Image (cartoon, rainbow, N blue to C red; front, side, top):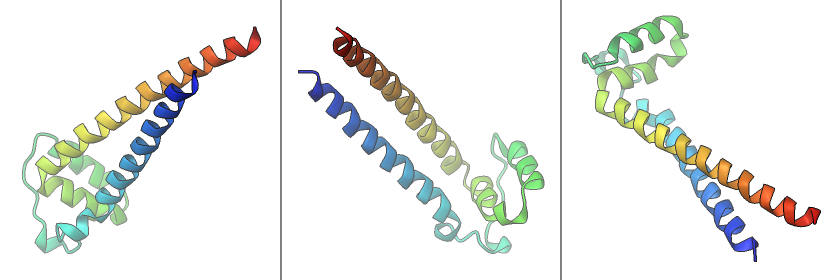
Length: 112
């Protein structure tokens, strides 16, 4: 009787995992999609968090430069990415708490 909610939560966590994986992959290929591999094609616009991105670009190795350029050149993509990842991590935390609650409940039944 307790298995359908557990299976549903496991299914949600699986979907969430693959969504997070695809979002990360999308971010990794973004310099190629937005053609920001070469510096002359990607110029920075002054977004709200541009000083933070400048600081990150100065602190990180040059290998990270194309991703920083994408975020600086396309602030809407950057803000959308922040919101999307925040939503995914909140959902992950909620599903983890639900999993713990179901596991505690199942353990209490087994201990009787």
